[in-house]
Length: 294
Image (cartoon, rainbow, N blue to C red; front, top):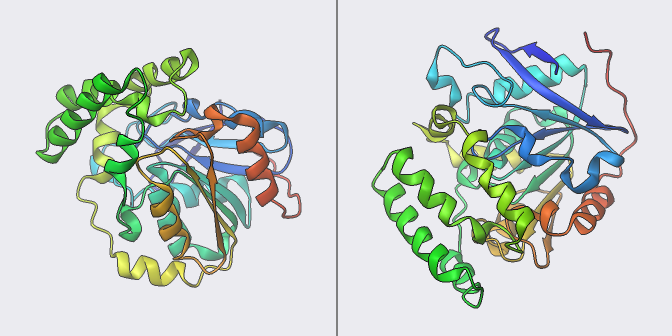
């Protein structure tokens, strides 16, 4: 498993999977080990996935300064990764909370992106509200798992709102997991059950700790981004809902929104073939090769 030194010399790990032109992949969670992305539904058959473990998670080292876990500080890690890979411009894919990180990276380093894929992305960096959350939750009311998961969801939102710690929040988050999947089957349960071990408390809590982006400045910067952008939403996802995803896409001059039917927060698990087709259709740039890695 390769590592590289970031801007502050901390060793960050990443995983190389597949073949074809490279695409840098940022995991959500926040700060969940990139292993949960798997092969992104088979995308690795056509692209080389370069999955970065954010500092403090997965195979990356724990920093001395916990403030460096914050979302906006992680932009420098992404830029260090690009430099390490020897890519003048890169295709970048970000999932969930890492959408915030990718949006900030695009605002700060617009000329380093060829294409940007935002999969069920976070919205805090740009100040877009998650409209329709309650309606999306209620739309799953006919599912057998709904009563228990809805109670956990309500308790999770209440606990998070009053700043409860991970010992209280994490079990509630796990109880609400069915809402994040289009089908609550064995594969979904296994994926959800792996999360607590893959998402360490310190980097996860630190990702948003003190995070107060200048959303007007970020929006202004993104309005000048030349790179094409794909915002991929899940039809059933409560955060972001398809409506919120469209509002995010509207901030870019060259963006499209695709809503994957029957999918929630992990669309590559709900319908791998559909997910891969959507992403590959978008990624129509000329192939590039990685520079030699040490």
